[in-house]
Image (tube, rainbow, N blue to C red):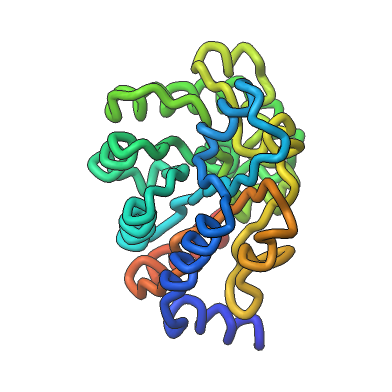
Length: 259
């Protein structure tokens, strides 16, 4: 019951956390942290980013709520911060994505073809999904190139979405990007969970619903304690959006029932 109450509070009653996010950005800048997108950070590693450089990598997974995604972008523009925004097929907004890229941040793909394929075809065992992996890879490639064409820009990093189907299958969408030939064909230099990226950060922080908000610690508490901070956030955790949250909750319930 408590879990349900917390979820309802997060989705429909939680005060905006945008000011707190802006405060973290300001505090990080004052502490000398360079605030970068995933793309910038990964390229910096190739260019031998100094070991003692203080960096905060900002990654936003746009699972839902484009309204709050734009607010995050406007805050970051105000403070000259670069970040990565990863959009699902269901949240693609090419106008916003183009603005993000023109500013100098990154707009790319939050992919989930493995989970989507499993649900569409009623596959409930990991072995059955892996057997159909060639078809799933083709679907990913088709979607990836379509987004690139619509966006009119090259996407060099992507980020896996975590769906309830992935948790039930115990199989992540990242399996798709385990294919080096596919990466080469698409020109993908980095997946947001790649070990080459993760091992070069000191701490990975992800936001959580109320009452935890962040795990394993808050971004503010990490400042000064860790030189390279990788921060993952979602619009839904910053601000309530009754329409979008209700739509997403009902969609997930429906998919869970019919799968």
